[in-house]
Image 1 (tube, rainbow, N blue to C red):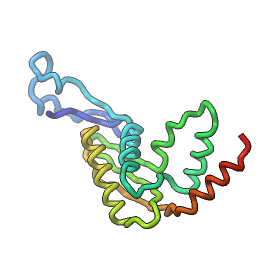
Image 2: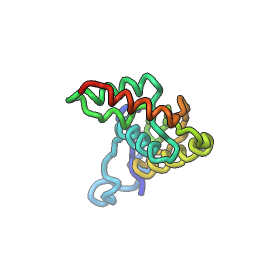
Image 3: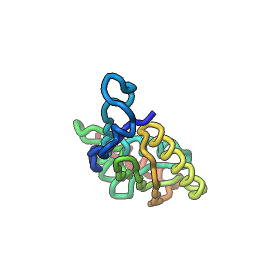
Image 4: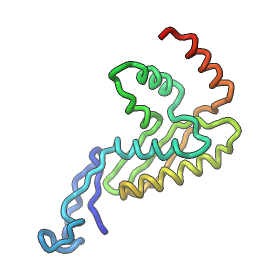
Amino acid sequence: MTDNITSVGGGSRPEAGVSALKGRTGAGAPAETRGKTTIADGVVAKIAGMAAREVPGIYNLGAGMARAFGAMRERVPGTGGGGAVTRGVKVEVGERQAAVDLDVVVEYGVSIVDVAGGVRTNVISAVERMTGLEVVEVNIAVDDVHLPDDEEEQTELDEGRVR
């Protein structure tokens, strides 16, 4: 099945002559080839963010300041938590290809090389399967290591906060 998939932000003008390459258009053409599918950059970012978080050894996504601002934003009523999925994810989407940059925090004790390989595999698989775009690269920046003590300190801070 050949579909003319393009992104919203990356030059969505279909190539000239695509219809001629696919065969006839109109009533005689297969239904799946009639029309154009566009995929927004934010959709690819959400897919990549969810796929990265599924990998064992990933504690969180986003650099330190992005995580701090995101945590504050999530606590403000009415702002929604939708940005949490794409925090730490940057995508560049073209007509047929995508590149993904991730800022991650890994759990202490895991092999960063293995986790990064797992993230790349999972992100590429999910984005290509769901969008039909070719993922040309997944760049990973490990910004922090989550220590078991970090969680205890955060719990103590949360318990001391007035609600």
